[in-house]
Amino acid sequence: MKTSALIKATLFIGDATASVTRAYLLSVHSTLRLLQSCTSHGSSGNFTESPHTAQGRSNHFDSSIDIKRPRVSIFPTQLANFSYRTAVLAQRHALLLQKASHLSITNDKIAAYHRYHTNGPLDAARKWLFQEGRQVTNIIIAANVLFYVMEINNPGFIQQYAQINALVLARGEYYRLLSAAFLHGGPLHLLGNMLTLHYLAPELERTVGRGCFLALYLAGAIGGGAMHLLMGHMGSVFMGASGALTGLLGATLTFKIRNRYFVPFTSEDLNWIGQIVAINVMVALFINGISHWGHAGGFVGGGIAMFLLGPRYSWSNGFIVNKPILPLFSYNKRL
Image: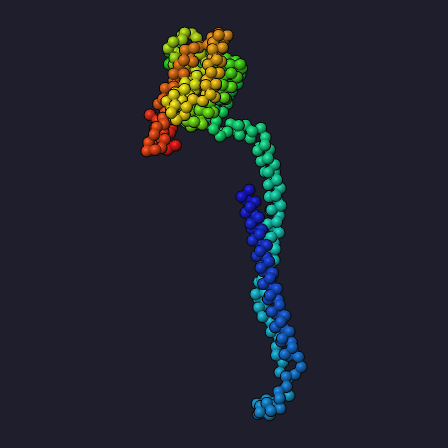
């Protein structure tokens, strides 16, 4: 696009230069015609002096001699130079027009490519992924879906990355405490967790910021895995984002309770908290294999992370300021 704009600017300058050159040549041509007409008018016929002047000059020359003024030809070299320059400019102008026509075809192709990728599925996915106020939420959802596709195509994926307490302790594979939070036991398990994350997480992300929100999510995931490691069965397999989700719930409750004078509870807050609790109770009653210790650990981990890293509002000189205990993601700001 920059090259096309440069070519267009060059064409404009070439046209302007050619116009100025033509105007100058016309003025020179008019001047030459005027001088030639004056010269021919003065030299038509004989130049005859008056009798008194002729008598006074009879001692010097014969008054009957015709005196013809020569024709004057001015600027022949300059005129030839200008003609040559005009021809060169015309040639360059033609070349630039040829390049511009080629670039116009290229620009049409680029525009078509841009229209396809701006209105196509890739652009729609990009716009969804980087929505304002929920970038981290969407990235986490995409990562969970990607991990589920990988575990479907690779049967040994769960064996390698799920949290199996015996392997964690025997081999020291503590990365499983975090990687297990991105694995799921089936499509319904994945769908339930991602819908909960879709509706619960964006409000918290907008409140605390992207960096702090990511820290809260990871703290809930690791807290759930750690609690299951301490209290769960050695041979059990623990996986799923439930620990991280209950961590976000614990973080939200901690934020509301600590800043209750500045951000009080609303009916909407009580509504979605009640829904989350009801969903977890129903899942615990009708689905076997639920790690309650993992949920409890995630709740505690998210609450502790919010207490240390999250916003802590207070009054200071007539303003509401944010003074977190560990200001890693937010700084003292007047609200």
